[in-house]
Length: 157
Image (cartoon, rainbow, N blue to C red; front, top):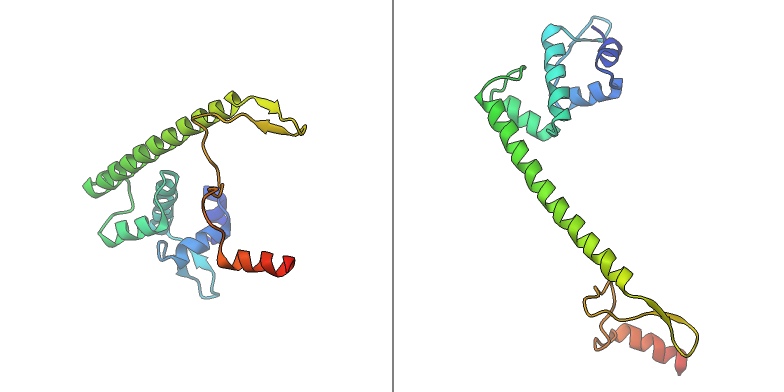
């Protein structure tokens, strides 16, 4: 099969197939006119690679898998081990994402609890809340840099 046929078969762009070839994951043969030709083994391997990528495996991980003797099919202890490791990584990522979500929910609650009020000058301010999170603010006691002081003095003097 030619690259265009392969791309249509798997629903990917021809450039993706060429990328996987450039990464050393797929090895099509060349016809006498220079076209890529994918035999049955190459098609099965490409199918395996695309399926593994849908499971979250990166090109580097697949390269290591093949280097360690992984086959072209989803079977064997090595593959089960890799998939289990990937599942553990996913669980860890989900835990971190949930913790981030919880911090965002708490932050939204804090901001909502800070009711806007008017100061005597007529400008709107947020009422300080004890649990408020400071976002990218310079502490008042922190001295300005020497460069900053020089530029202010130069403008005033």
